Length: 220
Image 1 (cartoon, rainbow, N blue to C red):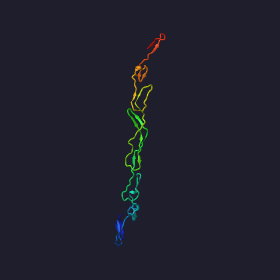
Image 2: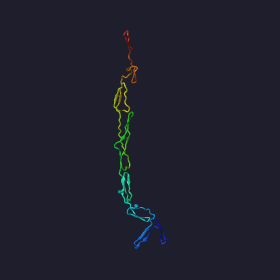
Image 3: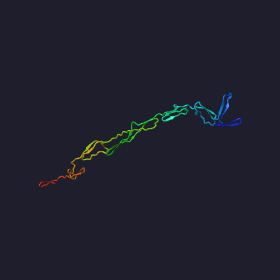
Image 4: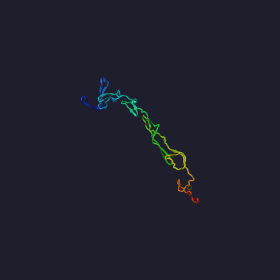
């Protein structure tokens, strides 16, 4: 910032610097106005570099640093204070995320329909993540094996008897189930008053009687 200079009562306005000849005509001493300088700490200058500010001479103390002075811990890079004459960089260790070798899960549920059986299972997949920088991507399992305990019944022929026979709910039929029939299941072969498998009987049982005097048998 230029200021006025007074020499022998003569005012010289807006003078940025003053040069005074040295003895022996060996040059000049230059005096520059440094009152508007903002430098106030030697640590802001590289080590060995000097500068004047506000009439004070500063000799730099800032160490010269480079890439080797940078440190990395996890995803954090620490840049120590100092002077960097050129670009510095530090690589952060690469991380990884992979699918786990095992998958935790709950018991499978079985839902059966007319012609289908559905197995459903709640699974929890937690990626295995190593320390380091991960740019993008996901880790999971594209194949989940479902194992369920299912009651099955192979092909069989069910013959009606005197008591009901049932196939438990949720049973998966691996073969055809045949309900046996009988051509003799007709009304004429069933006593009147009885019903077998919704077939009402019509057969009458003869009534036999004997006269106690004549001993004659009667069939009606």
